Image 1 (cartoon, rainbow, N blue to C red):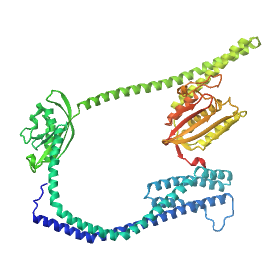
Image 2: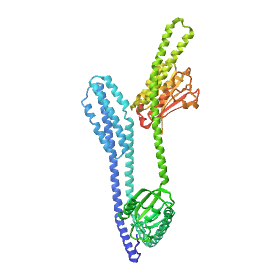
Image 3: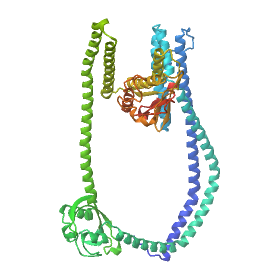
Image 4: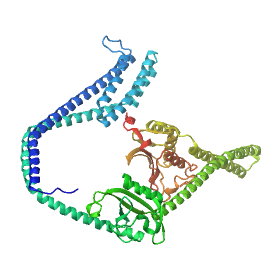
Length: 606
């Protein structure tokens, strides 16, 4: 762009334009400020009314749900129908429209819509159970109806979401009311502020008008300095850069380009691009694309080609080009030129090729390992399955031999027979555990809600019935509902809780604690006991197959339970670990990630 010649007439015109702008601002600014404040106040007032309407719809929903509960409890109690008592079906039909109105009214806030969506899901679940209860009441099956009403209260409690939605709407109402008051206060100062701004603007216009000439000269000086600095920067870059005219004649280039292709640094030269670099630029397709850049304004992005440069080394380069307007000092004023850049990617391409080869090799190795794992699982299953029949024969014939020998057998013979039978039984137990471990890796994975409170309570009752003579104190925290495979997760709790009972058998009073914590997007569960414990130096062996830290004579077992725990939790995407101290008890942990972690944290507490 060429600056216009600064003359007194030009300066006079500039002053007239600035004065017109100042006068217009003096008139338009107060109007704009007042109108803007009025519109903002109307908007804020509308939002306050909107918050009140949302709260009113929310209260109507709560009252309607309470009315449904009142109706169904009245039907359950077989109370005589009062003249004003609503029918269940009529009140039931009001819920969905109210939820739709609430969802529509909160479209401005995605968090509130998510809460209302979750609340709607809970209400839908509760109403489904209420519908079942009404059918059972009509069929005089009051036990089933009571069970449905109790399930509705326990599984689909909405108290937490009621409180969150009300608190959020109250907070929005306070914020919007505060904003409306602030806008009203700001409006009172708008006019005086606008007047001050107008005076300052008029003074600034006069001041700027007086100094514009000197600032323009300084700007021109800075522009020339910037151009010179740009040239220095381009010359110092290690990436080859050149400027071509539309006929691909070299107008200028930096030192890196000259070194790369062996030509001298030129300006306003008459050398064509095809004539430099010992034929590096003879690619017909590239030449045509460069001509299209100059003639049609197209661009070249990362055009890859091979070039043999002046040093005789074969290189792979990426060529980029775009059209640019040439400046006056380029010798081609008002003409379009081509900015050409070259990037040497030879080393990167070699690395990419090497990485590709390594990735292919890694994929082959992974496939081999996967195949080996499948073969090992198949082998383990087959061997374990085929070994059970011989073991049954050994145990059976040992019993028959004992019966056959009868009283004629001496004490040593009876001992040998007992050892044979006990070893066969233990081997059979090991095979069964190995089969279970193999099945865990191949069984289908079914995801469903699992209530850990119910699972733990059931296992505590089972363990209590089998160890009635022992003094065991259970300390159990509230546990959540999680998403996962119910049978697998039940096996995890059974193994950990059975181990806690087993390894506290030498304590006069056993204490077993069960709880959970939240950390880094995970739900972490633990089973802690005051039993025998173990040395942490051997903790790495705990979760291996058939790995035991105590003798079978001290604590019975096959040593595969914790391996099953690790495999199950691994299939759920979690982790397993343990902490202990010899003689002071142990704590076993497992975690479930957020995707299979708690779905309703407060639901399990109801």
